[in-house]
Image (cartoon, rainbow, N blue to C red; front, side):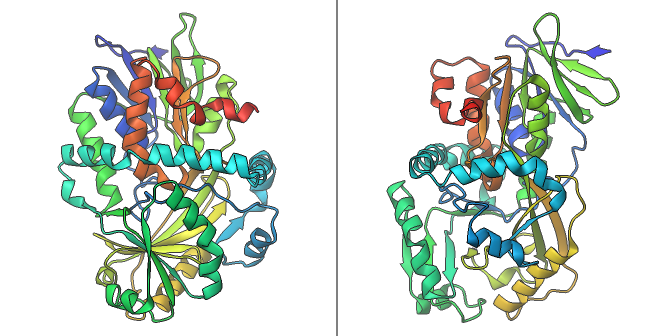
Length: 424
C-alpha cells in the first residue's frame, strides 16, 4: 500500500531521518510552505547529535588528514585503547572509503575540500542563532571559545601548519601561555605547556535539548511523524519519489530528502547513487557532578579527545571507531575515557557516569553531501556531516530549502558537496 499526505501550495516533502539535520530541514521546509512528513524508526532515540560534546566547531574547517595506511594511523590501531579503532568485520565495506581517504593526501584535493568546508561554515552562526532564538533556546549557546591544549612542545609544533591554514581560511585564534591557561581553567591538571584559543568556537548547554525542541516545534507546526525504518527508495510510475520499509509499507511525496545519517548511503544505493560514507562511532561519558571543572570546551591535542562543561555535566568524548553503525558498543572505550578524565581533571567525580555511543556519518573528504540525486532531481541528500552535524544543521537546512524551492544558483553554490565527486 502506498500512503500519501495532502499537499500544500508548494507540495509535499518526505524527509527520511529525524536527527538534527532532518528536523532542521523540516523546520525550514515548513516555513517555506511545504507539507512535511518525517520518517524515522525512533523519534525519541539518542542519535549522533544528542549526546555529542556540544561544540559549535567553527574552527573545524580542515578535512581528516591522516592516511589510513600511514605509520601514525597504524600506531593508533595497534593501541587497543588509542584514538582510532577498526573492527575487522567492517574492513571489506570500508576499503573504497579508505582508499578515497588516502587520496586526500593530495595537497590540491585537500585544500579544495578545506575551502569548501570553510565556506559552508562561514554562515553557521547566522543560521544557528535565529533557529535557537525561535526555539526559545537563545541562552543555550555560549560563545566562550575553545582551548586546544598540548602536553609537549613537539605536539604544538606539529600542529602549527594546520593552525596557519585555519587562519588563512578565516579562523580567529591566538596562543595562550601556560600561566594564562592555569588562570582560565584551574580545574585542569598542570601538565599542559602550550594552548591555543579558538575565539569563535561555541558550546551549547545540551545538544539533546536542541534536538528535542526541534522535534516539538516541527510537530506543532504541522509536520506528520511516521515511525518506521526506510529500507530503500523508489520512483513511482508517475515519477514521484518514495521510501519503503522492510514490511512493504511505502510512502510517496513530491520531493524526498534523505537525512538518515550513517544509514544514508544504503538508501542512496537503492536508487543507484554511489556514496562513500562510513559509520565513525564516537563515545562519550558524562560526569554529572563535575561540570564546574571547566569553563569552556577543551580539546586535548595529543590524546584526540575533548571535554565540555554542559548542562548534564562534564562531558568527555573522543575516539573514532569504525564498525557497523548498529554494532554493540565496546565498554573498554568508555573506560578509557573515564581514565583520561581522572588523569586530566584531578578533582573529577567519576561515580555514576552516563555512557553513550553514536555513529557519525563520515565521508572521506570530510564534506557533507548536500544536493540532488544523480538519478532523480526530486530526491535531495543532506547527510555526511561527521563531527559538525550540530554546527551545520541549520545551515544545511537552509540550503535544502533553497533546493526544494528551485532557487536560482542553489545547486551551483553546492557543487563541492554533490554526489558527483564520488564518480571521479
